[in-house]
Length: 263
Image (spheres, rainbow, N blue to C red):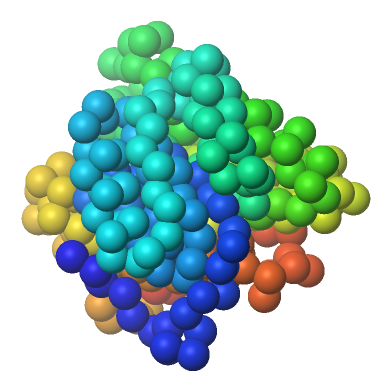
């Protein structure tokens, strides 16, 4: 289902001729909505996901709907070889990589005193090491092109703490912001923009199964804009940051939370 909104027909095509990789983009949440939005704007997109079958279904659907080339790739972002193979495939098929959206993430909301080493490492690896692996793999290509747009997914809880979220997740999402600024400093001279987006609550049916109703009611009480956020709200922000409209923005973290957090 296409939840697109707020982008008029006159704007469609602002990414025509561009090529993108979006990690964790075959599920029901932010990633697929981002991939759909980029494809709708004319970009060729690698549909990357750890799931074995879903990338193929999503890639076929987006290619048919928007007339762009969408390539499925099963990728575990914590596996260096997977990431390097994905980037190599994208470069071979598209000839260039203009956009990287590091969307892959995982949370394990356990108290610190009950959290195992394995849980801590898994959450840090998916959220932070995965972004590092993907950036490291695409940056030589972007540097050679002297062009690139990277968006890393942080979270509002990097600022708020979030009593319902795990410490590993919060630490990783805060780390994403520092990583984003560091990389932005290093690659700005190559005409590469590196930014982050920090979603608040981007509501989708899958998310509703993960938490009790009381959890969402408590969060909603903090919203200044009195409606639930949806994945398309996040995708619209990412579209702006990967477009040429954001050429003079780098090292920033754009909070998309309906006023849940302001900074």
